[in-house]
Image (tube, helix red, strand yellow):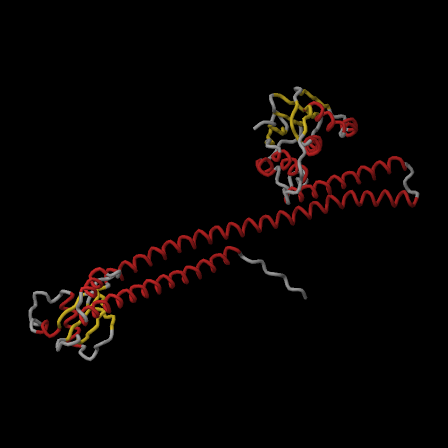
Length: 388
């Protein structure tokens, strides 16, 4: 049995990636800052030790003005021990360092990081050249450690906010992709249904003609031609929409009279209007517009076709002040139909897949024009603004 492929949840994937990134970034920042503080503290201590071992102007200037993050201090331990009972500075850093050295005489000639109450210090006990005294050189990095912790907290907060935002956007994207997939699935189901209907009609009439069941051959041929034309238009619309998605449609702009353009479009609906006894009302100003004639012909034709499909008795076309109105006295639109009328995968109350109207919107907007649908005067009106 073929297993059903599981769909990737983009929101969950984004959450995992951003959370992992947060952990990695936070860890890297922590390691970098700790390493930087550690390195700078050791450099400062070694510079101070070099000065004590070789007291010269150069070593003294390097000790005072060296490019170090910290400034180390030094204490003569033998001298300091004479005043170890003085409690006036018991809580000073010098006193804390001296007490630590008194309890850790075995830890010499190496640099140690120690915590002294609320202070963090790097300490090195050493014997200075040509001297019997023991010195301790230390660097207090407490402030740097606190600043490092603050920076890490800020970075973590920023990363958490970014994680939340990215996860939210991922969930929205996942939902949008899912909705788009559902729309496409419904579209192809509906398109297949609409293609199947004329195919069945063509098959039925052709079989009837072959077996001699249908006597009115002329009418059968007309029906077959009509259904073939319907299928051909639908396939053309689908292919043209695909080309618009790939932005491979070339527009050739020419001037044409709006009266001529609408007249050419209405000629293609002459028989349908006559056979359905639709009352056609046309009132258009004469104006030349610069458009791709073939594409605009298709767009207006699709809009008029929709209006004619739902018209009960009347179809009215008016062009005044650069606005084209196409009105029919059909059933008015629901709120959902008005908001989704031009969605290419939307199936309205009448059962249409919306291919023609979505293509019309695509073409009209490519020209820099606008189109909308609204309920008007006990019917539905399409409004195409030819100047924006």
